[in-house]
Image (cartoon, rainbow over all chains, first blue to last red; front, side):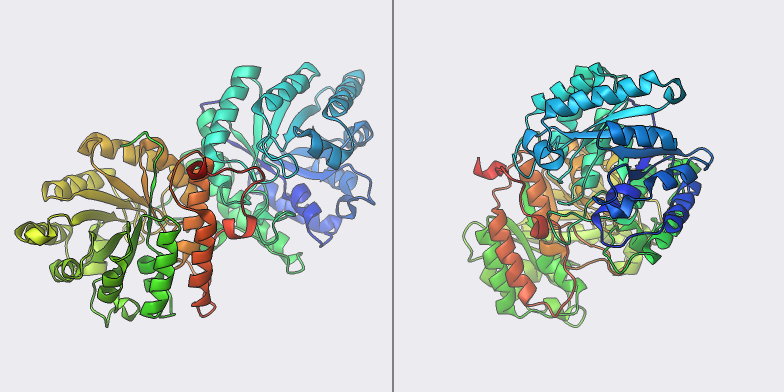
Length: 313
Length: 313
């Protein structure tokens, strides 16, 4: 829990966005996007997912993207993994942060990865043990992500106590940080503030916690604002909101990176990200899309007259 | 300032929306929309503006719309007026709430109504005096609206002290309530919370204050959430976000009524508005548009599984 003014932006469009669209980006096209966005000051990028290529052909080149991305100075390179095998491959490729995500909702976890939550926690433990058994990976951060933490398209309401139990389970098994995701865009600001406050009370205020919001019902940035109130200072987002929502055609998916950065900087919070640079990265990304939808308001409206970004002040 | 759970929705699409688009609605078309939205539980509708017909032909039938709307049981009928002449016409037509708006920004007020802020305050005083001199209008509420309270496309930053000074000026001249508007979509949640907290400290916590946000930069609902924290319980919004933003083509204008109601109800706040009914009103309105853009996420995404509106609980 932090009350300082520094906020960390974690770009996930290169994973969450790309896996949700039809267009398959070339490795060079991804790298052009990643390099431009890193140059704009985005400190962390989730560049792919170590899943079998036949499941997600869009991300089949993740190992190569990781190898090229870790050469970018100052960039923290993250990737998702579904299991120990994926984690081994991620670490071998040189990933700085390995993200392991399970659903808080038992039904959603079964549908998504065909495992019980307990089995996912067991697998998480193996991943940490693997990292700890290999001194060359001692600096690799392992993030424990909790999907459907604010509600589930299968189960509906998800008890807050389940979030707390799994958070404690992840930390007991060695998670370096926690990620809390509103996977299906169900969260509202009151719920967000209450949940994060309870989470900090449960796990302690020193555990790094990131938030992952979707804008499916237009509440993404309102939820960010509520999470800020509770002390959250790390947010996932997707450039141009790339990806959309598979459950609601036409609706937004991840919150939009450039809109998020604008809001934070307008509020006096320091992201270190340059908004003009983000729009250049957006243009690079958009050129590669086969007309698939993009989102965002900042790209249309620009900054208010007299605006000074907190990072530039 | 209120910490209770009741929130008042003030629909402005029938004025702010209609005056910003090309399509001219028929009186019967407007009434079909207004009747359906009132039936959905929307308690207050700003049905038009008493300006010269040649300035805004879309609103030329405002007096007739008012006369038909005041026959709808339970509905508070509001209209904007630019000056005393407009107020006289509004009261003669039977409006329950007369809205008088001036810009906090001197340059914006000059550009918009060709008056200094002081001259607008003088005109406001005449409107209150006119109401007070006519016993038949004793129940007519006069609202003092402050446009560009969070920033101005001409002047840029607007000093908070100017908002406070004009708020006190309006109340000293007999305003029954205050409206505070982010006319050009410049506000951010931190600014909103700070301004409304200071405003309640300045004018006292018992003055009814409404907030009017635009979603031009995607922060409309985040700003609502921040305003709720400060005690605001009255919000302007536009069905389907009708109207857009004249300064940013393609961008949103007013916050979207149905998205606002969804957020509030999800947060446990009671609007008394039925979301299904709002979508029916939206469909009635949209049928009359000549393909002009509409906005909103709720219409695409619907409610989360297991959702229970606070008003239905």
